[in-house]
Length: 163
Image 1 (tube, one colour):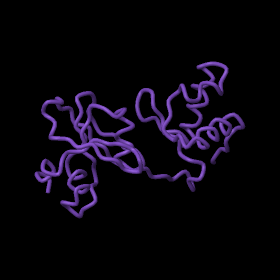
Image 2 (cartoon, one colour; image 1 turned 45 degrees about the vertical axis):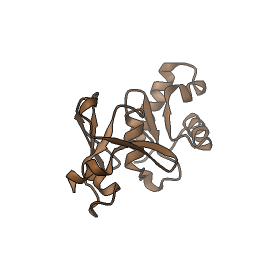
Image 3 (tube, helix red, strand yellow; image 1 turned 90 degrees about the vertical axis):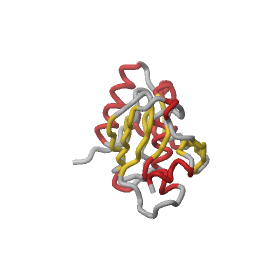
Image 4 (cartoon, helix red, strand yellow; image 1 turned 90 degrees about the horizontal axis):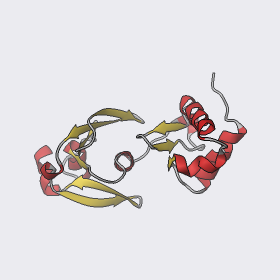
């Protein structure tokens, strides 16, 4: 059985949506609550309802109210950039080769090199494989933009190896 949203949940979700701020940190919503404990309770409830997804220690993604049946999709490159806070990562593998149109196959998994994090994360049916690698061993990188959002990807020349 699905639960509806309370007035307080709806209030801060609406504020975030009006500002079109779907990626948010706790400081963005702190003014709506009397204490940090109350804020934690509401974030936990929204995670259980599927309206908020935790991306990293401090960042969350708000599933928009306009999402039908709480199903939503976001560009994987934007998600990866937000998870990594915009630094110390490089998108590589088949995802980079597909971005540069070297292959036609849509990648099943997004390979991300980073010195900080490792393991597999699954968000919105997107499988992100973090591989630990020193920054000096990264392939040559290029900064690109998609929908006004910057992300870091392996250069076209470096992506040829995954062709």
